[in-house]
Length: 375
Figure 1: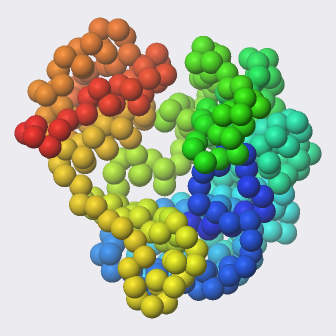
Figure 2: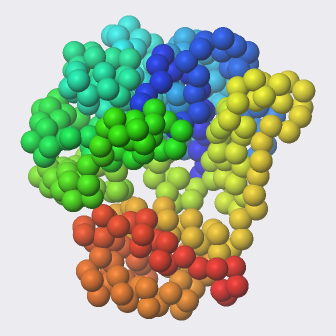
């Protein structure tokens, strides 16, 4: 199995918190998309004969593209790879791009799943975030998607916002659930360097909530989703049975994928590659056949640590038999410490976080990391 990821680096506006690679200028868009098609062609042998089970358009804002450009990339995937007939094809979209006509176009070209960047249903929050849509568009877009008949769809929400209260977060979850969403991705706001949010925090313009408030909101999130029947299959993701993201699940399980576009990452099981996060340099590199990427061959310890970091985030946890380094043998004390506190379960050849442990997923994973000298 394998996946393909397209990074579409264009947005209408810059969000306060975002540190992804994007541009708010449409200048050079067609040339960049042409370069992406060329990169896909040049790298088409990298997946070998592996069947492609997922295709994902991320960004940026892929829904800004003309449908014909998305359709062309999908057709190229079908021409170059063995794309499964039931492949999951996801398009990230913003509420302000959603119309009944556009939904029909996406569905007709083979998009099977939409990921809607709602983030909030409150007007004041959306303005502070710098989002291009308003609260009315957020609700209207969900109603349109729910009627469009896609195989699946999901919305994004953010908690842990400045001065966010538990009642406000409850309100957001209630609105989402009342609209019948089959999947939710909910992220705790983090302050990333060199973002507008980081500047506001450093200048004391805004104050971030404390760990206790963020933890309480995460607990409420888990409670509400459990009652609604959405399975907590990854730290930030909840879905009804049959609506889990296959693309993201493959990533967490270490399945190879090909990343196309500026700043896109790829992984073949042993080596990681990442393209330059600069549109002009990317286009020039593709056109001239010059190197526009960096790559790293991961050591057994690095591959083991990546599996710990991603696997522990999932409800399945980590299959110890798939690790290249004996984590239990080298980090037994850390495993025993976290199991004794009720944060980690070690049973049936797996390591799985408890509900309490999900609050400390990254910390627990780092405590279990091994070194290159470990064998």
